[in-house]
Length: 70
Image 1: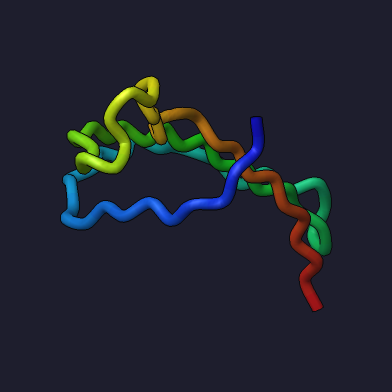
Image 2 (image 1 turned 30 degrees about the vertical axis):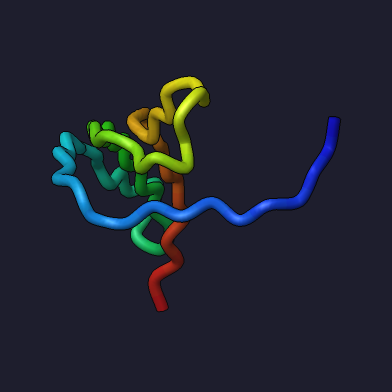
C-alpha cells in the first residue's frame, strides 16, 4: 500500500564521531588521501513514528581522494 502523508518530529540529539585517515604521496606531484569515519547517534522518535522500526543513522563512511600539486 502506498499513501501520502506528512510526518513530523523535532528536537535534537548528540552524536559521537570517531575518525582517522592518512595522506600518501605517490610522487612529488600526486598524492592519495583517505578517511574512515564512524558516527554514533541515538534518539527517541516523535509520536508520528509510532509503530515504525528503529531508525539508525549510525554507521561507517569512507572518503578517498586524489591530490594534484601544481
